[in-house]
Image (cartoon, rainbow, N blue to C red):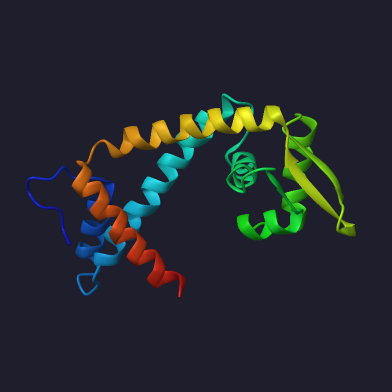
Length: 169
């Protein structure tokens, strides 16, 4: 899967060429794909972190707020459901909830159906901030994706969906 002459070279090409020199017996085709996915994920993750910082939140905190927002009105979930959705430990979730509650972006209240349970709900300020931040994040993603035409972007999404399904089995 080496770079075609008409394509620009990238750091992954250099890495796979180095491997080819020292270990010509290796098939680095998978490294070409996953190396680029990893680098792309890190680069976009850094950009998203900066975008959310303008709103006073981290990417992880945005994920909590966005999960509540996507739940629909009344924008309420249990901490356990949030943890499961975000694949976080309860300790990791507690830290995020504490910070977001101090910032006035969400509130915790007793669960009316479970004396021992809690409910986490977006505040009006949390809803406003989440809607602004998701717009800013999507704009950054769209800007990056504009390097591809619509057909290529859709094809890439399909390929990644297929690959993700295969790896999550």
